[in-house]
Image 1: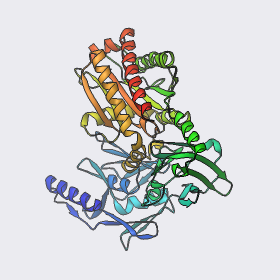
Image 2 (image 1 turned 90 degrees about the horizontal axis):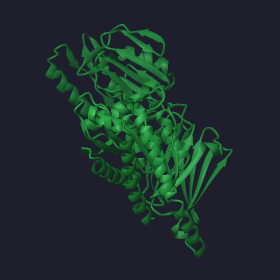
Image 3 (image 1 turned 30 degrees about the horizontal axis):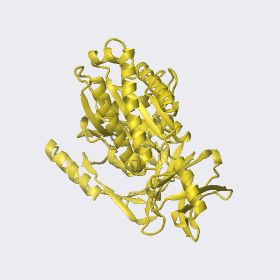
Image 4 (image 1 turned 180 degrees about the vertical axis):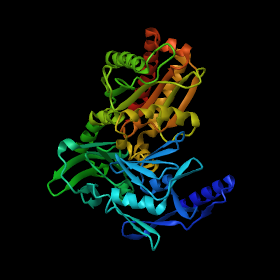
Length: 499
C-alpha cells in the first residue's frame, strides 16, 4: 500500500508538470533478507530512455536519514557510516571524499532528486557490500540486515516465579554499558554501544506479563529497548553472562506477600521526583539565535537555568544537574544520554525562539512527537540545525520510522510531558505577560530518547527587539525561572500524589 501511494503521488506530479518525456516504468521490487514474503515496491520512471528512482524513496526502504538543500538542488544521504552527496543535473556522486561518475546525470522533479536506477545502485553496492544484491533480470533489490547489529534477538520466557527476558547479542556488554529503569507500565533497557534493527525487534504479545516490545536506535552509541507490561514490577535483576546474553528477570504483583509489599513501598519511593536535569540550549561554538542588539540565546538560557536550579535546590531540596554549567558546546545526543545515565525524573530544555519575521512574539512549550503544525516544524528545524556543528552521520538513524518507534517507546511519558508542558506554558505566559502561542508537539533531537517526562521551553523571541530586551534583563530572567519553578512544583505535587 505504501508503494502504491507513492506511485499515485508521482503520477499526479508528472501530470501537473506536463513532462511528456517522463514515462511511468515498472515498479522496483524490494525484498528484505531471505524472507520472500517481506516485500515492498517503489516507483520508477523512464526519462530519455534511462530509468530513474527518487532518492527519498530509496532512503525510506533503508530506514535512513536524508537532508535536502532545495536551493542548490542537492540531497545528502546518510547510509551506514558513509555520506552520499547527489546534485541534480550532475553525473557525479560524492561518497565521503570519493567521486563516482554515472553515465547519466541525476534529474530534479517536484523538489526531489532522482537518480538512474542501475548506475546508482551499482555504486551503492560498492559502498555497502554484502548488504544489497541487485538482480537486474528480475528487477529485484534484496536488502540484508546490517552485519554491524550486535543485538540480534529477544526471547521472552514465562516462568513459575516470574518472567525471563533473554536478549541475544553478538558481543559482551559490561555492567557500565547497561542501564535498566522501570515505571508507568514500562521497563526500559539502555545498551550503550548497542546496535539494533528497530523494525525486526518490534513485537506484540496477547498473553503474558509483556504486551509489547519496542526497540529504538536512539543514537549511534545508544540502543534502547522498551517492554510494555501488563503488571507492576516489584523486583528486577539484570544479569550479564559471558555467552553473549543479557538476562532480565522480573517479578510482578502476582507474587505479593507481606515482605514483598514492603519491597513495593520502597520501590515507590524511587519514583519520587528527587532529581531533575535542566538543559540550557546551545553553548560554546553554538551561540543559538542572536538578537538585533547582539543578545545570544546561549547566554540567556544559561542564566535562566541557573536561577531555576537555585530555586529547586533551595525551595524543594531537589538535586539538580545541568547538561552544561558554563559556556561550552554539548552535542544534542549527549544531553538526554546524560539525563538517562543519571536516572533523572524530569528533563527540562530551555531555549529562546527566533524567526525571520521580527514581529513574531510569544512563549511556547513543546513535547516530543511528530510536528503537527508548520510553525512547530519550523521551530524544531531551527533547533535541530545544530547538528551541522556535529558529526551529522550520527543522526542517520533518525528516520521517520525510527522516530515513530522511539515516540511509541516514550509514549509512557507523553501524557506526563504534555501535562507538564501545559502547566509551564500557562504559568509563564500569565506571569511574564507574554503572548501564549500554546503547547505543541515537534521532533526535537534534544528530547530524543529521554526516559522521563521531558519538555522544551521557547522562552520568547530573541529575534523580536522588544522581547530581546526583556530576555537580556536579569529581572525578567528571574521572573521566567520563577514561573517555570512554580509550574514544575505543581506538576511534582500532582505526579507524586498518584504514585
